[in-house]
Image (cartoon, rainbow, N blue to C red; front, side, top):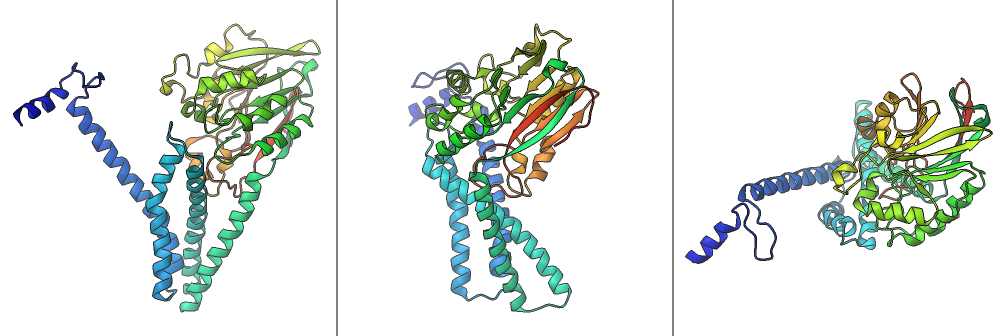
Length: 419
């Protein structure tokens, strides 16, 4: 026993190595990691309780007076989801152990519970108003519960249809005072957040390509978050991007999700499909004797990924560009726009927000990002267009946040944006 004790103590000595040859972890670091793990577990449990409590209360407990077996069954369903959901998410989304079937179940159930949570909170408020108006009794509570279920089901059905359809085309004009007359009318198609993932959407991807090609674009941009998964896993879904047509350029930048699924591999895969990777670099396109700089930066999360050469580097992206030329910058996240405005960029194209994807999540997105979707002005020169997203992440639903393929027509001179 004494020998075992001394061996255990030596494991934590800095500079020593464990039996498998890896550097031994100091006890202080292990304690810190345990505290973080406990804290994360506590936050997860709290989040699951907060997600389940409003549906349980509104549907089962708020004066509905259902028979005990009904209450027990409903409670069991919510409890089973709360217990099983973290394991399904870990199995479906953890790197190197990705299980698409588990991911589909976890993602879909999360969307269902989120919509049910929203409807239940609104139902509880409606119940209070009805009670204040003198409408009382078990009938009121059951009516509210039924309304919550019906509205949630309707929103989920409509939201699933919106998520799975080929997006509508959103058209608008953007006036850039520095744009040369030869480039007036340049057609830029923006895709963002395709998120090829656990649900096989190869046919959807082909439909998106067909819709893009019908727009006769000069430039096609993909603003990142191409997929959830490795290039090999999502090879079939990404393949239709190779058929996208553009007169002048097809350009792409990484999003934050690439840094959880082989970012460099996706840069290589897009190059294989004929797209120009704007990996902190730029290209110049010309039309009618005038030129436009197309620049791109890695996502703002790139540096923390630890991948060599990956970080958002605007100076590097613009290095060597003629300062007199207009600049269209592709940056995955809208919150990069202060740096773009400081550098005098004329137009930044971004995605990332999904327009909120499932209401009312847009209000949480707005805490992190300056814009949720649409065209906005920043500083004296810079326009920012934030796409609502072409695909979806995780839950296969879009509720009050439609997907889009965006056609931006660049106009020379000063004018109001239209579209």
